[in-house]
Length: 378
Ligand code: FAD
Ligand code: UDP
Image (cartoon, rainbow, N blue to C red; front, side, top):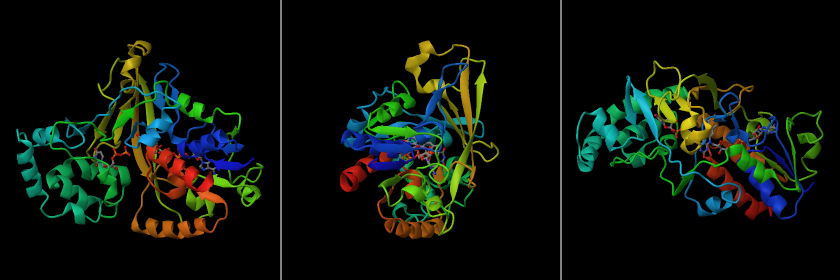
């Protein structure tokens, strides 16, 4: 073995694929029973509808290197992501656009009029100087829209005071003064035509790659554990960075998600893939309805059944799957300490969402892995 990779998510698999293609022998271990990390999907058995096991995954990128790379393993449908939100029983389009603004204010503002209105309502904060999520949210869309669509949703999603959350979280959502309600701004977008698992399996399908599932790096009863391998073979580690160091600099905080899946005996539950619930009195943040991600599969989907999944968010304990780094000021101090420890760890390369404690979209995880391969490992 030339390289041990801990974690078979997109970061680990990209490194594995590149290493294998250049003639290296690679072993990938994952503590789960399947490869693919959080992008894993499987067909719901009653209906055959593809369900994204760890929450809906939408692929989008403006990085041509990443787009060229991923197209080696899968083609993509022409799916374009659009999200709606339910506020006080009325449905509005997201991200905040001229349609949302005019529906909310029962108005017919032109783009210039809407900008002037938002500027007046956002006057208390400046976008460039916004220090946290609340200031940034108000600076971008003004207080009334912030309170309707962002404040309570964010409270449900993060259970952290928005003044403690980094402004970047909200920078992910565009604000538009047109009626364009595409969720993402990226050049390329789509869903893998044969599903995520087919894509992921193609990346791992190489004689130089051995995959061992249900294998935990910290389980000393299995031979490829931390104590037995570090210092003996180069390691790419994509698990939680604080766990690697046995929480020596404290625990970094994460959000986890609970998913409640239901098969309903109706053709269509909500008419769209994702409906957010903006208000505090609805306990879930959003409902996914998976058949709508693949309208091109309509002929294969049952006409009298649909699969929905309600998503709930809460703080993660050590036993939960960590999903979103919370990134409070204390977390950022802890992360600096872990970065120093990681720099001192010879021939161990920390990567991915968990290994760097960063919210990474799939294209970012793949792009970062390609860079690590080219610049450090190749
Ligand atoms: P992961 O996919 O988390 O893989 C890490 C792997 O390491 C896991 O399989 C885990 O089991 C394994 N592991 C951890 N510890 C150990 C250990 N001790 N021993 C062995 N194995 C271990 N991105 C998008 O582009 N679009 C989206 O719409 C989108 N939606 C998302 C929704 C949710 C709810 C979440 C959580 C993420 C979403 N993402 C999305 C991000 C996407 O999932 C990540 O970019 C991608 O998973 C990153 O890959 P990774 O390899 O860094 O991490
Ligand atoms: N957000 C919000 N209301 C919404 C959608 C998003 O307040 O209806 C905020 C919230 O803070 C969220 C962030 O914008 O965490 C990023 O949203 P996105 O949909 O990108 O989150 P993800 O799909 O990664 O959970």
